[in-house]
Length: 121
Image 1 (cartoon, helix red, strand yellow):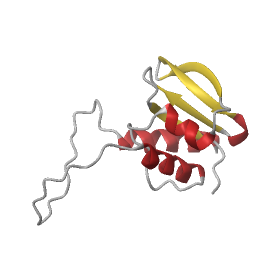
Image 2: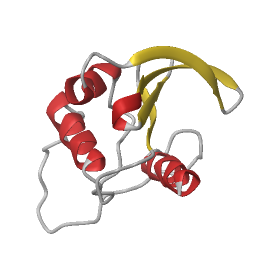
Image 3: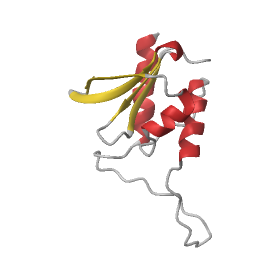
Image 4: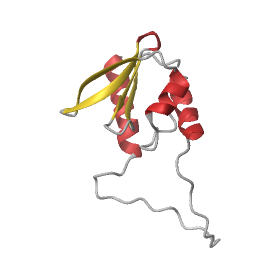
C-alpha cells in the first residue's frame, strides 16, 4: 500500500509539471479576448492544495510553485530535517513521522514531492 501511495504522489507531481519534457500546454480557446494573465501560485493556493492532499483528496496536483514555507505552514515546524537521494540526486527533506509524510525539496526549497503513506481517505 505504501508503494502505491508513493507512486501516486510521484505521478501527481510529475504530471503537474511540464519542465524538461518539451511539451507546452495551452489554455482552451474562449470567446472573450481578455488581457488578464493568470496569477502566480500563491502560498494560500499551495497550502490549500497540501491540506486537501493530506485529507485524502487527490484531485488537484501540487505544482512546482510550492515551497518549504507552504509545507511548514500546513504541517508545522516540527518535521525532522534530513537529506537523501531522489532520482540519483542529493535532496533535502522534512519528515513528519506522526503524520506519515515526507516532503522533498530542491536546492532552492521548492517542493519536489510530497509522500503521504497513510492519508485520511
